[in-house]
Amino acid sequence: MGITDFKSIDWANPEAMISKHFSVHEALYLPSWARQAAEADGLNESVKAEISRLALLVDIVCDRLEIKPVVHCWYRPRGYNKEVGGAKNSSHLSEGPWSAIDFSAAVPGCDSRGKSCDLLRAKILPMLEELGLRMEKNGKDAPWIHLDSKPPIFTRYFRP
Image 1: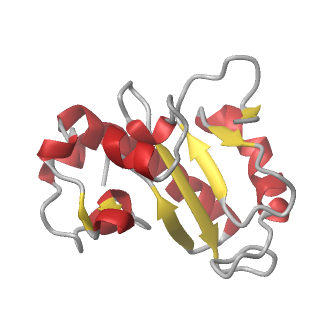
Image 2: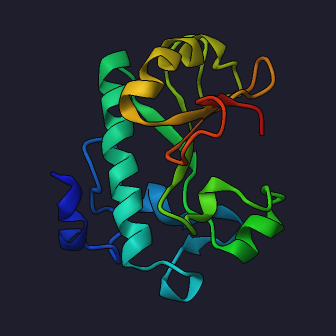
Image 3: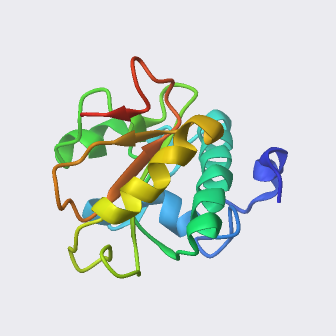
């Protein structure tokens, strides 16, 4: 599946695959609202295209590290982002030509049960430049990894 294939994805079907590792449900589910994001939430062609592009890049990371990602958060409408305490200019908003994903992986040292992902972040760091991604410097022992496609200001490994 290529970057231009985002229009052929059935975005109304939560089980439809966006890429090798990611489904529509993982990219669009809003847990606090118990539903998928929709057009009324700002989900448009531009957002779908960027979600698809990021999914393909994170697929590369997952394949190289041989991990199965567990998505915590991807697209957030502005109202949802505010409700969950997200940053005002969060990359999860997808209001520019970028997107963001927070995930963990079912591997030793990083999983959805709250274990630190520091070791996995260290392995991802050398890939950032090549893939055009940024990674958030979470506090030590943070149980998730944040990757986004926003252009770097000073560095690809940033503090929120």
